[in-house]
Amino acid sequence: MIEDEQMDLLLTDLFERYGYDFTHYARASLKRRINRVWSLDKFPSFAELRYRIRTDTEYIKRFVEELTVNVTEMFRDPFFYKALRTDVLPTLAAKPFIRIWHAGCSTGEEVFSMAILLKEAGLLHKSLLYATDLNPDVLASARKGIVALSQMKQYSENYVLSGGVADFSMYYTAQYGYAKFLDELAERMVFSTHNLVSDRSFNEFDLILCRNVLIYFDKALQQRVLSLFDESLGLLSYLALGAKETLRFSTLEAKYRPLNGEKIWRKIA
Image (cartoon, rainbow, N blue to C red; front, top):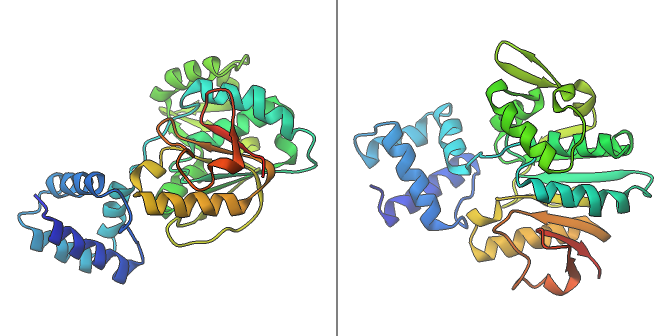
C-alpha cells in the first residue's frame, strides 16, 4: 500500500502534468482512495502505478474520478430539500431572477432535484442553475439527465419525503432500463468545469449548494472554499452544505444565520 512519500510524488505529478491540485485534500481519505484504485486496477508496484499516471492521459480520467468521489442521489437527505421548499424558495420568489450554483455537482442528480423544486414553486422559468464540477466526465453524464431506472423507486420515496405531492414519474420518460428527465428541467441549467481549489468566483448567486465536498478537504482548503462562496453570495442569500459540514468555527460564522436545524445558512452581513 502507498507510503506518504509515494503519495506526495503522485500529487506532484497530478499537479505538474495535469493541473489537478489535491495537496489540500484530507490525507487519510485521499490515501484510502489511492489505495483502492491501486488495488482495483491490480498494479504490481507503485512504480507501475506512477508510470501509468505520468504517461496515460486516458487513464488519468479514471484515476481522478476515483479520487473525487462521485456519490449522489436525487433529493438526498429529503428533509434538507423540504427546508429548501418551505423556508428558502418562498423568500427567493420575489426576486426578478434567481441564480443558483451547485458546486461539485457530480453526476447532477441534485441539480435536477432543485429544478423540480423550482418548477413546483413556479420559479423555474426565471431561474438559472449553474452546475460545476472538477471532473469533465461526470459533467458530461450530468448533462444527459439520464439515470438508471432501478434507482427511481428510492428517488421517488425521497421526493415524497421532501414534500413532493405530484407523481414523480411525470418528470421523466423510461426506456431500456433508464430514466431521462424532461428537457424542460435541463433548459435552465448551465454545466461547466470549475475547480474549487484554484478557480475564482464567476457570478453572484442567491443560493449556493455544495454538499459533501468540504469533508474531503483539509481545514485550510475548507476556509478558502467557504470564502469563495461568501464572495459569490449577495446579502440575504443562502449557503447549503452537506450533513457533516458546517460554518461553525470558520471566520465567516458571524456573517450567517442558520435555518431550522438543516445545513442551510442565510447571509446577514
